[in-house]
Image 1 (tube, rainbow, N blue to C red):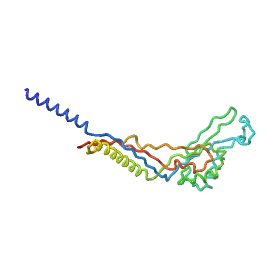
Image 2 (image 1 turned 30 degrees about the vertical axis):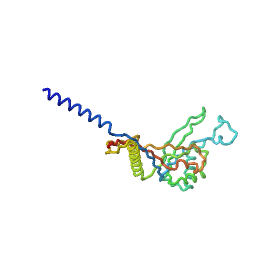
Image 3 (image 1 turned 90 degrees about the vertical axis):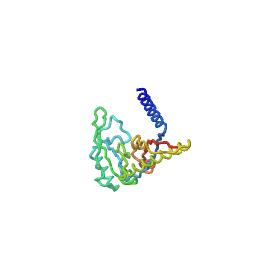
Image 4 (image 1 turned 60 degrees about the vertical axis):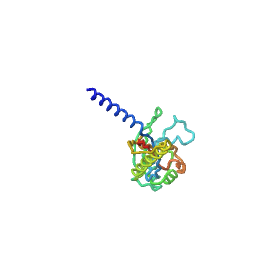
Length: 229
């Protein structure tokens, strides 16, 4: 009985020592990589809104606004301007319709937002040169897309893995050790889109969009490596 008890105690101690040794024989590192993607589809969002002609006569007060320009007329003008800029009608999609708060005694001002799919940022210049801004509430760049997005995701994740490996290598080698097998790979935070500025002004040159003409994504991978002598 004493021998069995002693063997059990030794076995437990050995298992505990093995676990303790294993816990001290790895390194966790996080690798980060950024990928810059040139979009092949640009969603340009334009919101039109009804307005009163008196707003632009330079003399009328808000309580004197009476002559409302209907939404249908504004939309016709917008579509014609887009056609003149070389934008196909099938590239124009209605996104939403709404109404705006009114002053007492005045009609609601209807609004409509369009999602226009472009293939070149220079098309924005063509649009703003032709559009009648009196019926425009906002214009801004929306989502940027690329057909090869999946390949870019893979490239970013692999680059983050390599960054983690390089980090772990120089840290471990600084202690006279070497990397062993990979024990854990974990993707962190999804594929975060790096923030970029947007504009709500209605008369801008497309050159001002230089700071966000690309899609920038950031990737993070946590990797656990075994440490060997």
